[in-house]
Image (cartoon, rainbow, N blue to C red; front, side, top):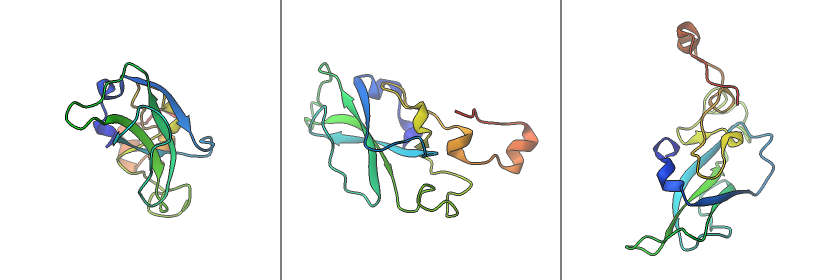
Length: 133
């Protein structure tokens, strides 16, 4: 979903709150959630754990249809690299993953070499490298 997050969708963010130290995380998953409030810790109903969330500024308006606010939530699943370094994502990352060091309010963040994993043989052959951070 992070590849689908556009800056205009998160233009009302005022800050990002981290619930744990992100310095050891290569990536976090991010998604846009419809939530009943602009701020505060949102409920979390997935496997794994929520590692952070965005807070909206006072100018943010709720959806006319639902009365909810669109906010980013950052999370990890039990089979992600931080819990299973040799697991499914040892050399890759999920499509909604971004490097948490690139996440600031109003910016969707980006994948880096750290978050994506080592470059594939095809990437190396073509000389394609992602930024380190």
